[in-house]
Image (cartoon, rainbow, N blue to C red; front, side, top):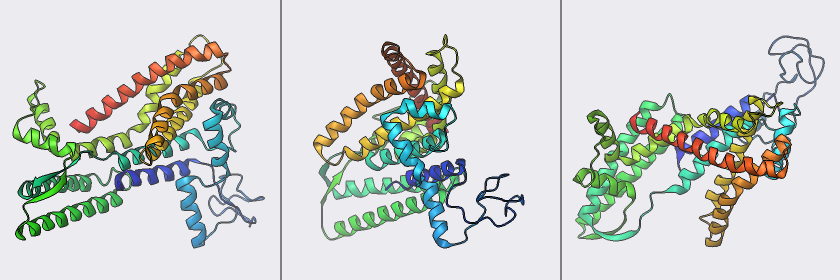
Length: 366
């Protein structure tokens, strides 16, 4: 399991929960608010919104954590079906102020985007097949991988203050390092016992690192300083991927300002719509796409036909969902929603390309 992504997903859920109005079950009122001191006449403080009765039990603490991570209350079950089946109505309801029954678009965005990154990192892998290799070659490869892992751990420790779930990340990296050390010790013991070959998988990161080290791949951008930075990253692609992942976690919010102007372009000549409306549309749309891609990543590895259906859903889901959300949110006719869906698909491709370019640049040069 990728501890980086798991920590990011949990932290994002807690942030999202913090953005919501006070939840949980309030008890009987008891005089003044324990937070702001204002007189309380009902179950909640009219001044700050805190419940009149403050729980101090271990069970309630567990309930708060569960609520913060997955929004385990009635609103999620009202929000998700509408987000999937009738996104236009959900967006319209939020814009028009009917909000207490739904999870906010920002909270949904924060949680689902990080869950998507977690699913991708969990099932991405390095790929590669298995083959018989000389044991000395495998020992050398594992020694190099161990050194790269030590560098990655050092980078993680340096970034702990900036990375969500930093303590969990450090524990995960240390566990991976210990596993590599045990595997290397096992290989050396097998060699001492007379074994000459082992079955090994060769991932793309190992191949890239070896190609750069041997000179088969060289980097020449015309800028010697940049070449040095990129060559260092290519020698340790695991660390480079880690940095790009963390950059994507930290800057995923850039998808919002990148997308809102494109949606605004579709309605330049129509009055009555504001950038706030477009922002709500973008947040719920990205959330729906994140859920779709996460589900596909989780389902695809289970069984061949399911992988085909997941791929089909990823191909057809975005235009169908965009059409339904545009039509319902902005009250469009079918032809008007169709051409805007086509344009929005093109705009989305541009926004994603800009986002990926920014993330890879920041991750590789940072």
